[in-house]
Each structure stands twice: as C-alpha cells, then as structure tokens.
Image (cartoon, rainbow, N blue to C red):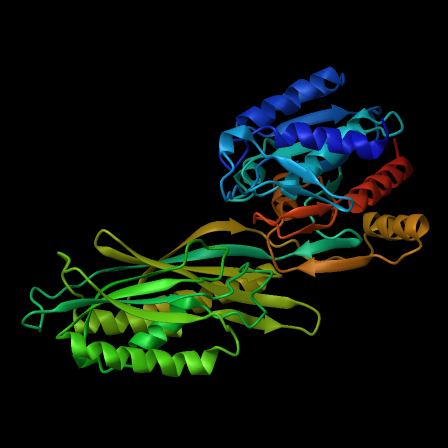
Length: 467
C-alpha cells in the first residue's frame, strides 16, 4: 500500500467513529489500539489525550506531531451515530450530508501513516481532545507524556501555507442585574418581535477584518432609531457562540397598538438601504406575537443596556499592513434568569495587546455599571525570527515541489501556543496541513493531491531531523 492510500485508509477508519467535541472516547480507544498494533509505546492522560511514541534515540529528543481528535458535527440528514459517509471524486474527498471532519481527522491519519512508515523515526504523536469548543485537551495536557522539543501541528488548512504565529484570546463576560417595571405604561400592550437575520457571519478571528455586519449591532441601531417613549423592551438576544460573528438577533418589545409597526418597518427600511451593499442578504423583520407573562425593563435599564452594546468594540482595533494585531467580537447577548449577559471575544497577536483590549472592554463595562469577568484565555503564539524548523520546511518544500511556500501569521487560536505553555521544553513550532475548504460546514472537502504533498513533505523533513 503506498503512502497516500495508507493515509486514506486510516482516515476512512477514523470517519467511521462518531467524534464530535465531548465524545472522543471511542476515537481515543481506536488510537490506543492502533498504536499497540503498530508496536508503539502508548499513553493516555486523565483528560483523555493520547500519546503514541516511535522513538529510537535516548539522547536526541523526538519531534512531536500533533492533531486534535474532535470534529465539528453538522448534518442535513446523516445520523451522527453512523459516523461520516464518504464520497470521493477525482480531486476531493467529501462527506454525504454532514461535515467531513478532515479538520482534524486528516491530521490524525497522517500521523498514523508516518508511525507505520519504516523510513521515519524518533517521533511522538500527540492527539488532543476538545479543540473545537475550548482547547481543553491542550490546556490540561499532562506534559510528562511528551518529551519532544519540536512541534509540528497538523491543523492548518492550506497546503503550502505554513502557520508560524497565531493570536491569543480571551472572552470578557459582562453581567448586570435586570431592572423591570412593575406595570407597563401601555393600557393593553401588544408584543412585537424585531428580528435581524440573513447576514454573512464568519469566524470571529479569520473573518473579523472583512466587511461582515454584526446582527447585535444592527438590532441595537434599529431599537435606538425609534422614540424611546413609544415602546418597552421585554427581551433582547443575539449571537450563538464566542468564535462566530453574530448572524441573527431579535428583540421582543411592547407597544401601545398595532399601528406602531409601520414606524418600525420604516426604520428597518432605512437601515437595510444603508447596509445591504455590505451584507446584501440582510433581513429586518417584524411580527406581532402572543402576549407573554414577562415584565418590561425599566426605561433607564433599557437605555443602559443599549448604550453599552452600542459602545462595546467590534471589529479590527489595531493592525499593520501585514496582520491584524488586535480585534474584538461582540459575540452574544442573552438574559439568564435575572441577569443580562454579554460576551465580548478578544484576539491579539501579543500579550501586551491582549491586555490592552481587555482593559478597554473592562473600562466600558465599569462605566455602564456592568460586572465583568474573564474566561477561556489562551496565550498568543508570538512571531519569532530565524527558527531552524521554519527554514527547514521552506527549503524542503522548495526542493520537493519547485515552489516557494508561504509563512503566515493567523488571527485565530491554534493549540501550539497552549502546548508550548504546558510544555516549555518545546522550542520550535510550525503548523501545516492539506487544503481543506468549507470546514465546519456540510460542504467541507479536502483536496486529495494536497494530502499526498503534505505526506511527502513531512516524511522528507522528518528524515532530515536528528534521530
């Protein structure tokens, strides 16, 4: 079996195992059993991370090859428990009615194939859990299980483009206790729902520099465009998760009579006319709802909430011509019991800038009398010059394919920085991978020839490293 078929064989086996985030135990067991079959040293820490070792030297540290076990599961009809069904074309591998999970199943398959390759030695395979929802596997890794001083992460998604630094991040959680009227100002109030939808959205790091609108900001703008004395706010919610630019948001308001809907429609038309050139699918809709048993916010609390949401930063806050250095995503707003919670997601290329962004959001919260706390921190992978591993990859890529590779800095979280923090003996890092398009969607696919090129590159690089 040639190397390409070996990689695909492992990937097919991995695809047969359901492995969305939080459900990695079966794929972990598969890795353990495969490692034992190949005669490797096998370990698993208390968190569920798996390490396979193929070491040949007691004096030369091995090279760590790292991938994550979990995948984002989305489906248009495929049953999760049956795993991923594959469809292969001449150029690409697709899934049938679900996400493919090439992110990061192909990374796992590449590592297993290299473990089986008799010409590759002195490597450690590190497989982490829960990368997609919190990177908790990397954050809680038992560092005693690995010993390599070089790390090759296999989670990049463009063949020939290598990641050499990445943003760090954290979420700031803002909370305020809801203040409500005991009685509505309207004699017989009607409940009107305002909804914003149809936006492009995107990844809160990779897409934050594009002109994608934020549904929460649009909804706040809509609410503030009509006289505050003509309506009361019952509820406001928007966004789904911290790493996504919000594509939908909605508010429930009380008005005195049904005729006021026209005013809201006119305001919506004005906003749509001003924004549709940026997000041409934008929809601002109104509909009357059945009465609900819920007290309206006081006018002062409503105004405080809307002012805070309008003031919180969203988008690129600092950049150079080459990279985005600092950004903020106004990610979610929702009511939890008697509290309003707002999540602001920050990313930065350095620790200093991350602290600067955090202080900006915290000051905004303090001025609005919102409580603030920090969650889900991960450190930046800061750029370094003259890293031998980077030079080796560039030279080997040029030699193999007669092409120049691209070294990039990404404005998104990568496990490398967390793993280096957990394992300070890791001195050199790079992230590579085959070309994966539309990851996290049912259109996800991986280019077959790019898998082969990545395998050739990894094999050639590893053969040049000390054994």
